[in-house]
Image (tube, rainbow, N blue to C red; front, side, top):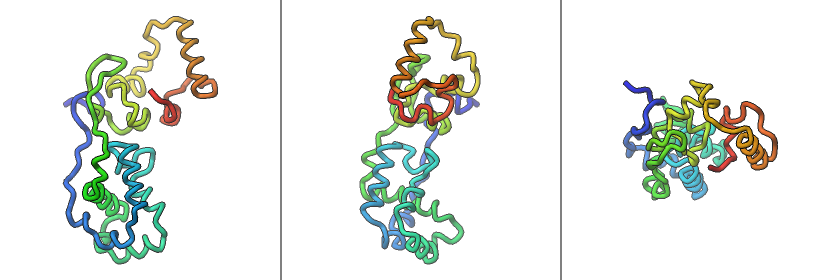
Length: 201
């Protein structure tokens, strides 16, 4: 079996069916607002097919809980039977998935597409990248396939130095990068998600 870090043509993100019990939950609908819908829509546009998952260390439930008064959350948790035996975050995430569908918010989702890796030239589907790789490069800047990113970030450190790049080209690249960043990048630049979070492709 091929490792998920070594394949390019299979989606890694399949969604379970939405349970209708979550879609029309009166215990959540009683306090739900347009602002909650806006949180979902913003995440759909920003995080695409991972909008409800924990990306950038936050999930949709975290963002929804942040804009809801604690008293409201406590009352909901204490009165909603679905919160017995499940975390409120999982109940809220399931509701948000159903709400995105029922309110038409999911129509704004930009699905994963096929593209060509800028490093190896192979075609790949964007959602073939495992979440740790997407977190490093941002979901809206997927231009390298999983095998190439895996080699660069996790395996073959020598890959970085095997390309025939002149001293002048290297210096020019670092100068452009420094101008873009507003500071001289450290030697290990690009090894953490924070390094590339603000860059565009």
